[in-house]
Length: 162
Image (tube, rainbow, N blue to C red; front, side, top):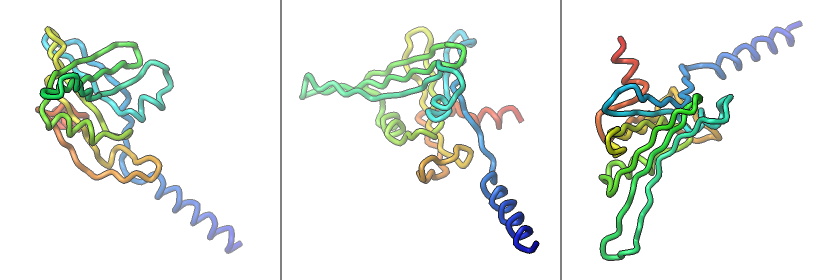
C-alpha cells in the first residue's frame, strides 16, 4: 500500500513539473488590414506542428558576391498563415542589426516582421526568445528580446491591450 501511495505521489509531482510555467504556441499570423503596412509573426516550430498544411514563416539573408569589390546582401521574409494569407518583404543591404537577428533565430524563437505595403520593403524585424517558447531537443533559450525597430511581438501586443 505504501508503494502505491509513493508511486502516486511521484507521478503527481512529475506531472506538475512537466506542465510548470506559462507556455504559448505562436502559430503564424499575417495582418493585412492596415492600408500602409503589413505585419506577420509566429514561430517556426508552431508552423511545423500546426494542424494545417499552409503555415510557414522564414527570413533569410542572401549574399551576392558577383562583384567582389562590393558584395550585396538581401533580407527576405515571408509568412503564410492557416488561411493562406501571404505576407512578404525584401530589403537590400539591411543594417547589421537585422542580419544579427536572423542569425540568432532558432525553431522556437518568435519571428515577427513588418513591411511597407507600397513597395514591400521590410521596415521592422523582431526575434524574441522567452520562457513562453518551450525549448526543443535540449536547446537552452535565454530570455532575451532583440529588435531592429519598434517591437511587433506577442508580448508587446499583450502589454498594449492592458
